[in-house]
Image 1 (cartoon, rainbow, N blue to C red):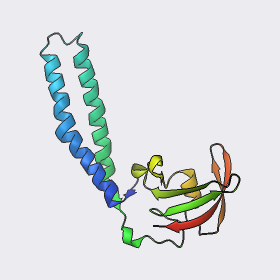
Image 2 (image 1 turned 30 degrees about the vertical axis):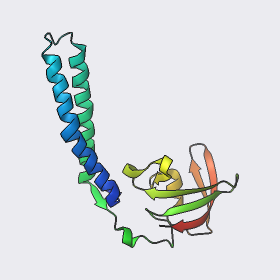
Image 3 (image 1 turned 180 degrees about the vertical axis):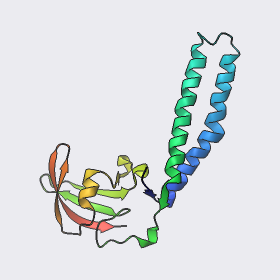
Image 4 (image 1 turned 90 degrees about the vertical axis):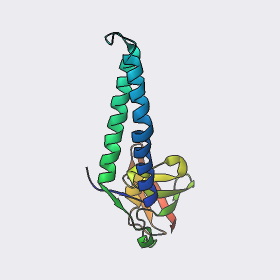
Length: 156
């Protein structure tokens, strides 16, 4: 896996989730497995099977998060500039066809959350905006075709 750039806030959220899985979820699932095991025959014990499945899913997620953390590189937010679009910028764009104005913050994959207006730098729109300046017009290829945007503002 490649290096994953993230903010300190995003890094701390991942650490908190790892801690929660290790200190709360893992013991809960272990208790469920022990309780189901105490009920006798494991060959037809749906509770035991469900608890073991939950354990496998949780352990896989934990391994994925630890891998992400091990490849994380924190971004020095004080070094973020606004002359051209880059990660951690808020970019205000206008759709040239619909005149709709949107503002997105470009973040790492692990911090992307469309409801909060945060899109991954690896999305087609973010990739098309990277390096562009205020006033630039860009045509971006997205799954539904070509979208045209004008960059209206770049901020932090």
